[in-house]
Image 1 (tube, one colour):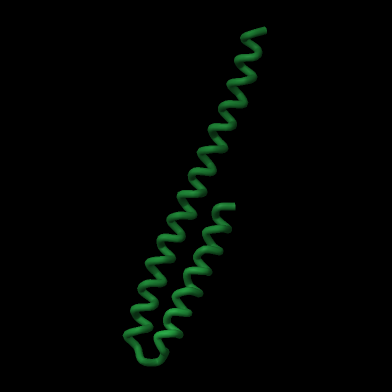
Image 2 (image 1 turned 60 degrees about the vertical axis):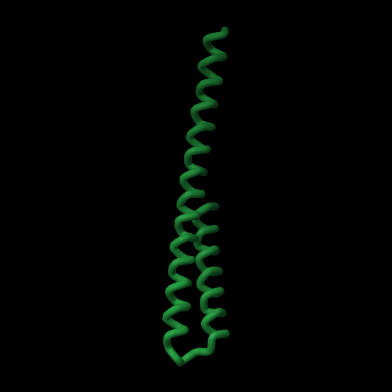
Length: 79
């Protein structure tokens, strides 16, 4: 009886660990996506400021839009 209980409990524990590992991988991938998005939005803002075709306000808005798009992508990865 104890052996059967130990085997059943071990099976549940193993699946819980696998699920936790999958979640951790998803969270890490989500963080990586957000970090890449931050770097990309910084570069885009710098390029925008160097050019004279847009105002500083437009450059800031472009950066915000880029970061929001990145957040949405990261959310899709995570869930």
